[in-house]
Image (cartoon, rainbow, N blue to C red; front, side, top):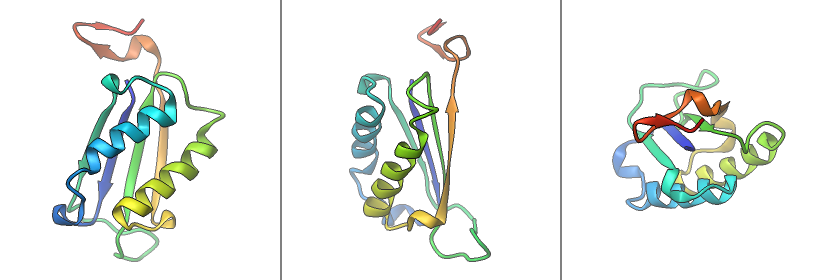
Length: 114
C-alpha cells in the first residue's frame, strides 16, 4: 500500500508527463513492494515557501506498511536524488515525512491488510 504524496510549488506544466508512472516504479523498487499496490499523488501549483524563500520547493509524504524505519535515511537519500533529477527541486528544498502504517489501519478492496 505504499502511497507517495508529492506537493510542489512548481506548475503542472513543469512536471514531466511520465513522472507519476516513473515514480510508481521507483517507489515499488525502493520499498520492495509490488507496484500494483503503489499510489502516487502529485499536487502541483502549491502556494508554499521553504526556509523563507519561494524558490521551487515541496513537501513529500511516504506511507507504507513496513519497509520503513531503519531504512528511512537511505530512502531519504534516494527519494531526494529522484525528485531533484525529475522535478528540478533541490534536495534541501523539501522535507520527507515517513509513515509506517499498521496493517489494520489501511483499508483496501473492502477490507484491511490485517
